[in-house]
Amino acid sequence: MHGNATNLSQVIFDLSPLLVSLVVFVLTYALIVTEKINRAIVALLGAGVMIFSGVLHQSEAFRGIDFNTIGLLTGMMVLVAITQKSGVFQYVAIVATKAVKADPWGLLVMLAVVAALFSALLDNVTTVLLIAPVTLLITDALRINPYPYLFSLIFASNIGGTATLIGDPPNIMIGSATGLTFNDFLFNLAPLAVVVFLLTLLPIYLIWGRKLKAAPEDRAQVMAFDEREAITDVRLLKQSLSVIALVIAGFVMAHAIHQEPGTIAMFGAALLLLLRALGKEAETQSHETHRTFAEVEWVTIFFFVGLFVVVAGVEKAGALSILAERIVEWTGGDYAVTAFAILWVSAIASALVDNIPFVATMIPVIHNMGASFGADQLETLWWALAMGACLGGNGSLVGASANLVVAGFAERAGQPIRFLPFMLLAFPLMLASMAVSSVYLYLLYL
Amino acid sequence: MSIAHIPCRPQTLCLKPDATLMEALRLMLDEKINHVPLCDGDGRYCGVISTAAILQELIPAGARGEHGLSDLTFAGDATRLLTAHLHDLEARTVGEIAKTATPVLEENCPTLEAALLLSQNHAPLPVVSADGILRGMLSLRAFLDYLLRYAEAEHAR
Image (cartoon, rainbow over all chains, first blue to last red; front, side, top):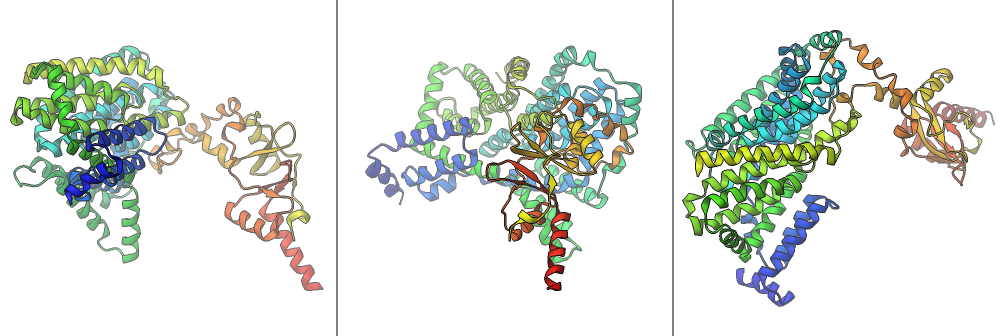
């Protein structure tokens, strides 16, 4: 079967699988970058062409799909879709606001801390979807410019997402492909995330923080917000928080209990669906389950599926091992130079294009570097990739999906975040975070 | 039978797209109506503005749209949050937020089709000539009133 598949591309196209796979890969990525066609459609089409052209057999394509990543993403999306209905995220945001007595600068810091913490445990897009509306409401009540708050929200979500295995899709993919655990990510990346977060607040304070002022009567209005009223379903709240706590405990112990994060997240999702369904009529159960599944971002899931197959195609054809050899050649076989190159190239690439396809490609490339550096000597390179891909998303408005979601809210608030003005500040800040990451990488690993 | 015989609100009640939201609001309050059509300089229909659309502009940005807050009970009686945006209505034009996707009824539209569109939209619909000139707005009330009179006349015959 396998040989037949390879022959197909040679017979029909009279081209080598390497060339065919590269053409499909480049065309797929070019179409994704132009954003003219939905990225999931492009990725699935690219995957289909990889199979039809004979580069991959269907069974190889399916083996190329990382179902641990798919399970982790889908499970967490289901958990969040149910949990958000309890109002817990608005509750936390209001409590944080009142803790600083609605002081504008304190509010900015607190909302950024909340966003960073949520981003470390949930995906970034979900976090900003939950925090941005309440941020706008509070800035509206305080009659202050929401722009600094939304800018900080973008940075906080991307920095927070860097800290854990489940915080950002690049980390999910890296963790799944390498076996690095939740704790590995937490101990290796969370300290860096804390340092970068604190350093990022400094320029934000100098540019906006000093000038943020709110009238006492407006602050009093925000202080009158009743956080208990934000909780819309106490039973659901208890169920959701219990299951999320169990899932996070499962991630922490994943290595010890010999389970993959994808299984833990999917099991948690099933458990919460069950708890929510208990005691309800069949029709209500069916309606609620249908609605919950409808909230899963299927575009993202199918985008991943397609990408995994496209990357499996170029991997099987040998293109990525050649690329890995070339990178090692360019860096002179120097491990430290290779790590820094991965860090900076990942950051700049992630600032300009979607970091998911970039990381999907880099994972097999780094695996192939095992031939030069030793398969057990790659950990530093994985951290370099994670830091660059996650923090690089801060470099421009298109660097991460969460950035565009926040921009949508800003537009609605009459304070649009424009591409160039955002990048003029965000890109240098992102480069500064890369400088910090370089020092961190050098001191801890090289 | 078409809607040509059904009296609709005259086309004199319309606004240019560059009218402010405050002008639209005052007109609708004075005339006790919830929808006003927009016409260009030649009288061609180009959208409709409603009291609902204006109220949406007064709601805090965080609660607007698909992903906005769906429950504001926790904010208490924050009427000032609504009135704070009233002055913004002076600076914005109806063209910015006018609904342009509303179905349009042609003057000779069959009554059955008009009934279907009116029932689906729950709002008055613009009636336009073949060349797009606004003839007026057909309300559900005017349509039902016509149907009732028509049925009574049939019955009497």
